Length: 378
Image (tube, helix red, strand yellow):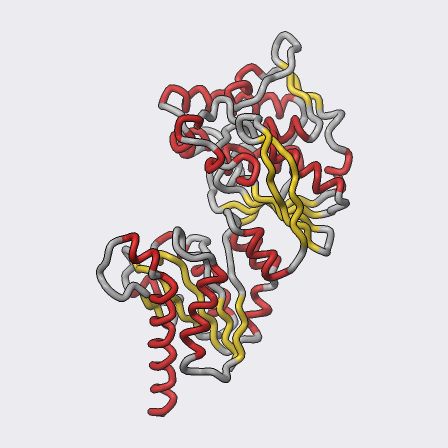
């Protein structure tokens, strides 16, 4: 029996590869002769490059870049053998790089992301996969584009400073010095949000508050992003502000599509294509996936939901092992043959998180034992 184990991480407790090993350990106690394939998954957010490194190999490269407040830090990205780089924007402009007191999307910059891209271009890559998630910025890629050679000026012809609020002053764009290798590079941006750049569901309104913006600042930032889109159009760039995902990562989705002709795809789809997930599923007899909490979002582009659709399309039985199931009725879980929460007993949150490996392993043992009993009773 060929068993494919392809879960997402369990947030705050286990990385995806650890979940894989816990499930394999449990199943192996009942089916020691099974052929196990471990394929940790991700949806384009933090941890995606680590997952791809496990699945595809490659090498890591450390680069000295600037953080959201233009302070020197060291970030890393993954180089794959097929002239592909995998960059997580959170490495350079992530919210986790700032304290709560430092969060300020009016001045936070994506400059470091541009530095990572420029370094990847110097390595001769022809394809860049960018994970959009966890940003501290709301500058619509202003800093990133500056690092890649573009210039931006206000009404008086003075260069703009860093930060999303500066875009309110934008009048002129000079793309003549944009990095020449960009035009020969394919960009794939992985995002799990569908927000446009501006408006009530735009980058500023939806994500600005968690990055430190108060209601008045949200309005200023939204107006600034709208000005950026308008001036970009006046300079002949395609109007991408309303495409699905333009508001991802504080508007980095807009910058990548408008100036780098990036293809915005769901994070799951991007990762699934990179690791040839459907081929792995087609060759398996049983597929096991999972995530920390199975809920309505699971069915909207998350790892477990995406894998269930692929498994059903290939007529493969699929099991989901999760920490908990929240708010789903039986008709909403029909994409799985089995859905099994792994928490073994009522306990404090800390203990539940700390015992995740053992709980998943125990659940896997019980599922495998039930499968074996079913085989015996046929």
